[in-house]
Image (cartoon, rainbow, N blue to C red; front, side, top):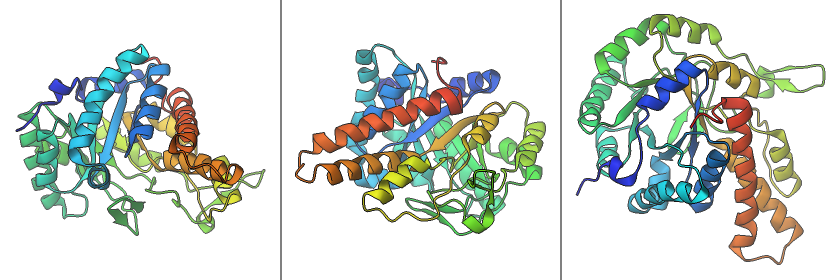
Length: 331
């Protein structure tokens, strides 16, 4: 039996995006697969008074089970009240690739879905996106579409090369599909290995700086669809301190180069009102767990290594909300 997101205490993204575009900040969209990740996300957002989008990929649904995830989302809305501040929460399907998957999520209480038809031809992308929009809007669920392709790897999403969004297509795409927000490609990419050292330049301190994001494309898109909510995927900054910790304690991460945070802050001040961050959270948790195992090799209680990992993740997300996205004190 279908269940409405309203029964779970969730909200869709429409009003949150309107306020974010007007206020010059972005709503954090954090992926989760388990309890500790959800706790960290909610604690961080309550403590910074930030709205939040809980993102679930198709891979996460397979890993955690769709029914359990739905009940975790229901628990999330009650948990934030216990934490002392009732922030708005969106439950969002990240990179849905079929109508059937989007429909299943909508029927299971998701308040927002992404239909990623970017791997199809332009006309096929429009047809698929429109079909999802029609079903979603009948249930008051918001829809994110995508134009352009991001390189990199994230769960089941794999692309070797990026294709920048064509500003000449955005107005037609939005009008014909009826989407509520649009994910674009301006140089971000999925995963921790976003760029190779050969693609980067070095600053005065020898720090590798990746190729500049195509803010010119973003600006042209804003001119063509003024005020329309824009989304950035693949926006982890890959904190070097977490990479160093992982490698220090037995890891083998190489060429991990992310998006500078100041670039994301610049984007968040524009019509970019949703920024997706996943890899940074994975790196923080992995760094903490590796450190615990190395320093306390006799530890076998999951609470003793997942607890510190959760706490480090919370601090990471608080930093993102305050200093990168600008979403603190916006709930």
